[in-house]
Length: 130
Image (cartoon, rainbow, N blue to C red; front, side):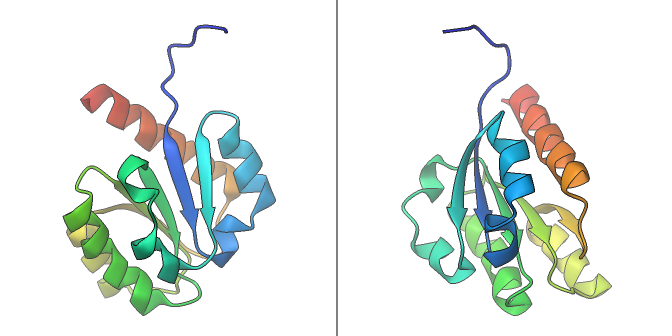
């Protein structure tokens, strides 16, 4: 097995759009372990969260539920990095999500390469902090 200095992170792509975005999945899976959760309603019931480093949360199907999940996720998993995608959120809702612990927000349409680059940067930053 080849030695690598890069740590592998466990990233959950939650929500219909990101969990079905083949380009995003392929880009991220070359460096990380990826779990797909199509419905964000299932996220709070998921047994994978304790071992997850980051959630890319697609709020496009239900932005209110997505916004409710941010403080819940941070209260139960304080080290979890949360990136919000889509959702059509207002500036006030985005500011609230950041205040609750989200680290970034990508509006629709998101650029897959830019989102993957940001996910990798947040993982690298987390690695330096640990």
